[in-house]
Length: 266
Length: 302
Image (cartoon, rainbow over all chains, first blue to last red):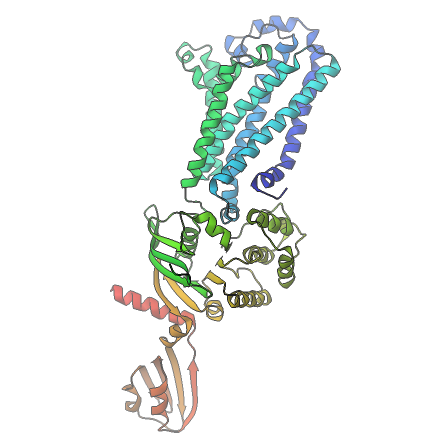
């Protein structure tokens, strides 16, 4: 585990990944266990119909039947809770990937070695991608097993695709905070700016669905490209997922020159 | 091309915004010497080192290490340089052994037997987690990783921070072995006796400017010594006050005190005309030399 920066960084993440994995699996299991109770309460649909439009949007666009498996899991997991958790992980990792080592002063050890700077960026970014995939996989496995065990009828492929879109959304913000860390080396600043941006773009998308003046700008929000296709029901939408992944690629590509150029404060 | 110049800086300048880091530093460090980089805190020692290692980029000027440009060839240079940073920070969640293996792997070709030998000499507890180590024990790990690959050049920023006297002594031994093997050491320090003890040459930096570079011996010979001569009987002041290199002569009955620049010869010969009971010479510390240089600089500025 100590052969290169990628493995060492992954090693540093092992505890964190373990706890995040346990948390995500637990969430999947609990939500699946609750579903049979919801299924027997069709009156909930009536209640939801009476909600104001903005709140409906928060529960997920175009959810008709809350008591169906797709409606339930879209609302309970994929419209808020799971993206939130992945976002927290992604933004946190991205912010500390470079800036964390820089603030601690340990980045000097890496830089003093015969390792080019771009290699540090690539390895750390690789660990962020890898961790995200690992967490996504754990979450999917947790949900798939519980759904199968309880006998809930939902396409596991669609669950996988919805999980992939969550990962893509989280990577957009993760790679943005990563880029800020490469640019300025300030962990708190990266965390703050990226979290603020996440909240703003989230609001842009949800409010944009009801406020007419904002409607034309919803496409600027990564949340729009995540929510709009309703992936759990319809599968991945190539356009929307490519937009999300495109942003990830752009932020990653800018990270390398950003870090290469800068004076490092260690 | 000159194989015997290991570090060469030309008008190396670094500003942080409007703040001055270092200004027009011209420095040559030769193969096989221990070069001391001396100055008070904030003088620009660390800035120079970070620039040499390409952590920060010069505002003006250039530098080479092993005749390689510090900007263009930083990766190759890093492969041949051992480095210890001044404000040592280590990954707390590792053991010392893991740390050294990791850094060794990043470089390749680590001789673990040599690491163990060094660890034995410095009494390092390698299997312990770094988190629980004292400042001195962390510093020893820092020294180990700088020396363990037997690099051609070792750059040390305040290397004896937190070391107890015994370990300092061991470190000085390691320095002289390194030198005997023809390898080069560049160390920064604000501790004058240390530089005096281990360095061949010293560069004095102050407020970002290199004030002087001298061999330790030369530095001392330029220096002002305080002399006390106790005579058997009272002596006439005129016999001494006109001597070359002698200043501030004060005669109080049988006791003469004065400052002598450079050689004591004239003073001793003049004193020999009388019966001398005792001569006390205060060897100048680098601190005094330091101050002399600073005064000169100040006076020149005026």
